[in-house]
Length: 184
Image (tube, rainbow, N blue to C red; front, side, top):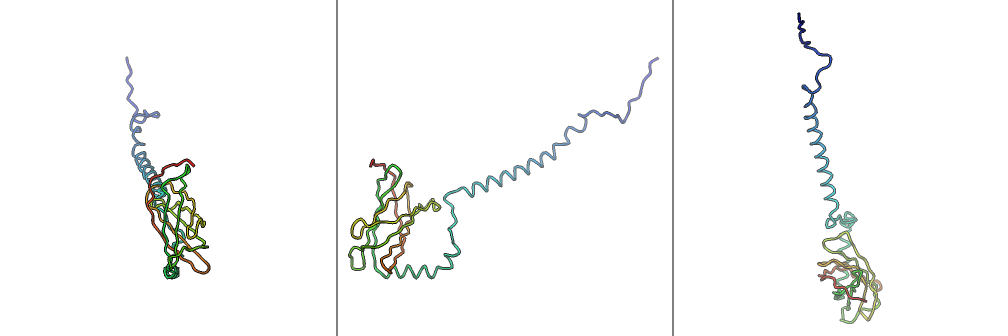
């Protein structure tokens, strides 16, 4: 005679594939969504902080507090009656340096000689890349400097001209054409 045994309802070794195979899916989805959110935030942060055309003005708060003094200096410089004419060479050397020429005349129309001339320049799309130079007098009223100005487009040049106690700060904007390399 054959003996039939009844199946044990509680097996000490349950089949691992039955009922447990999908237990990780929902927690896995939650973890994946959280990871994607962190990844999106990191990518957004890197994109926002790596754009060279966006820059915070240094010492902005101090400049804002000193606005009245700055405007007084500009008015005092305008009262001197000096006239400046800017010329930036179209041709550049192999490194992208261009000759910047500033012609300055006094209130009587005579060349302004013996002045100290400084300039800070930046391309409008790269305000964080400031180029500085001190212009030297090459002829009466003609001041020259070589500056790295590779980028084509509009440049903002902040000049400070000082002769004795007289100081004239002013800003000029200039359109710079494409670099043409000229062997020197």
